[in-house]
Image 1 (cartoon, rainbow, N blue to C red):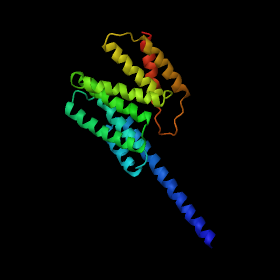
Image 2: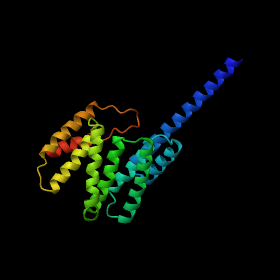
Image 3: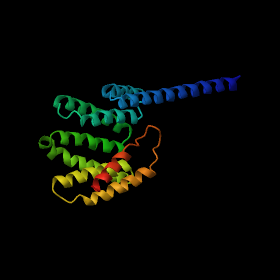
Image 4: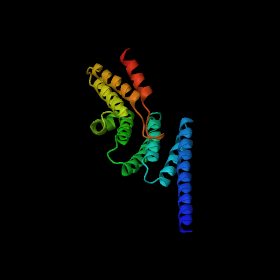
Length: 210
């Protein structure tokens, strides 16, 4: 009788765990679908709700930040909206970092957030935030030089800086080739771990040949 009770408890626990995992996966798929439909606010809100339920998982907060940051490049003319959006994205990055410190993927996202600021108003943010972008990429590269997103985004930022100062950009083209090779061999830890960037690497390689 005791063994039967233990078995039932274990079965219920397993079922609850499966249901929780299934709910997480369903939520993530739905949020990603909303993002693909350009429903930025809805996607970010859903990722935020998932993050609240999965409070030890860095991925939902990472995605929430990514949605807002990438959309930031499209709304740079609306200063008030952009600033509010980036402040919210920063909160998500902070949450993700709490759950996964020294994470190169999160460092890349932090660098991209500062890049939006610099791109939106170089005169205002260039002196203070451009060095931070470089610092985050260098830190991420030291942590994981084989991460394709680190290699790609670091090279693109360095190329942009070289262009700005009138320096030769050809050395960075080799870094894009390296990034593409890393993408080919890269295997994300799970379905929802970051895997983006390969298409961007191909675009940058093509631009180097023009």
